[in-house]
Length: 349
Ligand code: NAD
Ligand code: TYD
Image: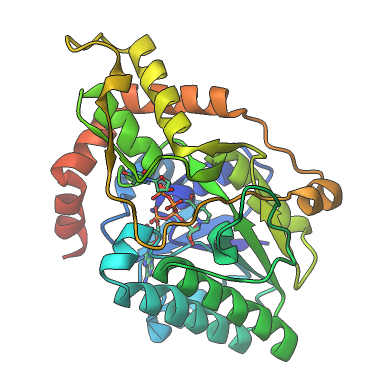
């Protein structure tokens, strides 16, 4: 693996993954990061990486659905492996406006698969990053395994499910050297504050209301993003071709409990609010349509086959995350003020 193409490398997991590969892992090659810079991307999150690893890191603004541009990039850069993260990723947005989810998550994935198919002699691995949401909703018991039938309930999860099927089909039909992973909810540094954890941290810090959907009893399995990155690198290197790996934190929690933990942590590290403890900011709001009740992941395969285990507990990972948002005012301000959008405009038109 000399030149790894990472798609969507300016998003939450992409930024953490590229940082992990270049700063912490034994990866010795180059990374080409192709991202079309949607609202969810912040290329400034990697500006220090570009300076420190100038010879091993290249950013290219490109849309994965642009077959010509992506093909030329793969050839010019002699890409020999792909880790595909680029996606529209926010369920609430997919409910309001699904079109871009179909375009990027399905057509984009198809475009990359075709390009890899044309370059089979050089490209030895296509890893597709997916979500546990493709399996749909669980009742009070049970876990998603790699063999659980797909039953997606939102336009987001349906579009990811479609791309997973395409990846699997390209392996079965054309023998493409693919691997897949389906991961639970990630949290950690650099996450855009539209998702539950960063939204609640920032609102709690500023004494704003904390909107919990429905009764707040929906269950997610939470994984610290660095643990996901470590798993992705393992699967890329050692995963069996054509195989799927479920990734999760064995850490199921109701949304309300997550928000309460955030309130308590923010109370501990930030100045008190005149109105009292931050749990009082919790407000129950209208539920999300089609809201999946419970996700939970069986991680036996990746643990036994590849020896992966998450390092962070939810308590330790959440503490790190709160601390990151508390001390990285510069990043939060860029996102809030749209300063990074201005930077994108100046650099890329
Ligand atoms: P994100 O929304 O933070 O980032 C997505 C990135 O993809 C952005 O930088 C965006 O600009 C880029 N992108 C979008 N459309 C593109 C296109 N057409 N061409 C090129 N780049 C494009 O998402 P994330 O949370 O980092 O998720 C990354 C991947 O991991 C996604 O495939 C998602 O489905 C999957 N995943 C996420 C989670 C999670 O909890 N965040 C959990 C499991 C799986
Ligand atoms: P989210 O972070 O959007 O991830 P996903 O929908 O992919 O799981 O939401 C996590 C959970 O938190 C989900 O059950 C919806 C809920 N939620 C709220 O209760 N309030 C909010 O403001 C948000 C953004 C999410």
